[in-house]
Length: 80
Image 1 (tube, rainbow, N blue to C red):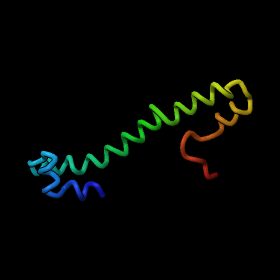
Image 2 (image 1 turned 60 degrees about the horizontal axis):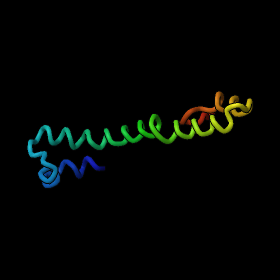
Image 3 (image 1 turned 135 degrees about the vertical axis):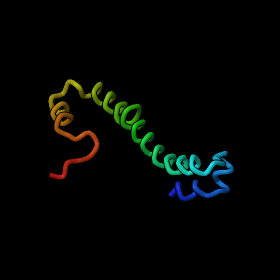
Image 4 (image 1 turned 30 degrees about the vertical axis):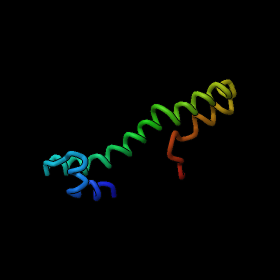
């Protein structure tokens, strides 16, 4: 949806993307790169790694926690 707004001429002029081909490529790629970057940051920098480190400190010596951690999917739950 953001690409539809970014390809409009007034928006491209406001962003300084005056050339047609490069401006259109930027307008299409920017909305694709942003969610990928946010997902990477949550999965690799903050969010999951910080939570895992916290719970490893709290419960790392418990056998039931280790079993749960080894058998539970990282992000997407198993259906079967």
